[in-house]
Image 1: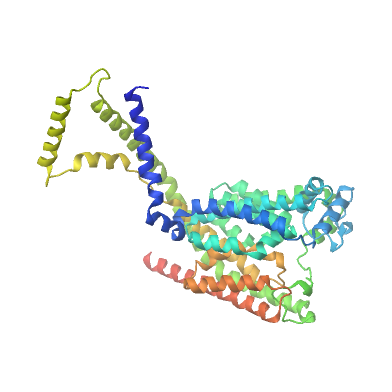
Image 2 (image 1 turned 45 degrees about the vertical axis):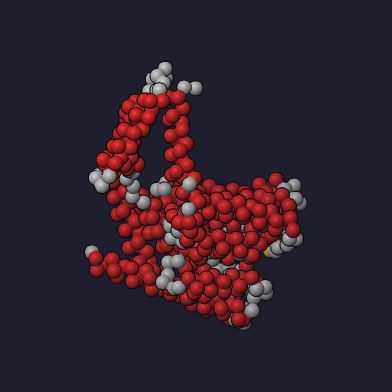
Length: 500
């Protein structure tokens, strides 16, 4: 290999070392890995690796607890044996109460796990489901740049209940939530049809995903207009129709009542949030209607603010479409110029291979170079440095941060549904756990108060069976989070209206 061909490779290695590797060992970079949301990608990778190790450890060391897995397998077995009447599909824990998507997914698990007998394999499948969900969750946090890396690492890695729900209980909630986060990522990438498909698939596994529907409807409306909104709703509906078709043909009333039973009464035994209430009141229609009224009232309060966020998102996305091509073109031009500059410099510095300098010539060149440096002292040294700076210039605007204008409304509308839920069972924690850091970092509370709220909520979910105190405390924490988000949202929108 000649000297001339070796030089570009050496320059490239030197450039990588100075710009990337060396930077990784600086105090500012290491500090950023802890507190800077912009440096989350590397920490997110470490979280995924750590979660893989933790979940394997949990599966291998902590005994599996049977709750619903056996019943799920019994319900799917009835379907696989040819029963399409939902009222006749039952397990040990009662009738089948989930839509058709659940039946198909758990029927697949039925085959993969030897008719549900190989629970260990099922647990490892759920490790994969959880890690995949984390990838989509962390991608949202990377885009929004809202929450410091140390908060996510601490919250995700230390939650006993979440690990239990995913790999020790094998509930269907994590699958529904996974599909929901897939859809949110597609919406952030403006892939509307894919977003709608995965959102509807999430609903087909468990209808709690419908809690996001009010926000999603207005997001469609603001971004797409009436005509395209109807198209997206049609896509969502057609997915439900296609998946439920075998059951709808056989016994339509039984399928609709079984899979989308909005009047279902939950068992007080498993409640996390209303232990302090007596059974009669807990099961009364008056109580259910009161909660529904509060839910609707809160939606009326929050949705106008969410719509303003969506409108800002829509406008800025339009700006991005106009500006981004110009930025890309400018960067491409700079890159081409830098390449030409480097080639020109290389040609100037290139010496014929056959030419070797004598010692006298080398001494003369060295003394001449030092003389030039002295003559330049106190004067402008800019030209060479300026050339290097020009080569490194890269124009960019961080449009990813616009994701905040979409994600916060989606998370808060879902959270309102949690606050007003008639009953929360232990597996329902997965419905909003991964949005809690985002919601808390969307308040003006101090870091200590935010962590205190996270810890108290986790404690309430980890207390089994729930007590009067933990149920009441959970409501206090939820209302505190909701108030904090409302206060900051309204203050920001007031400020924005004054600026306009």
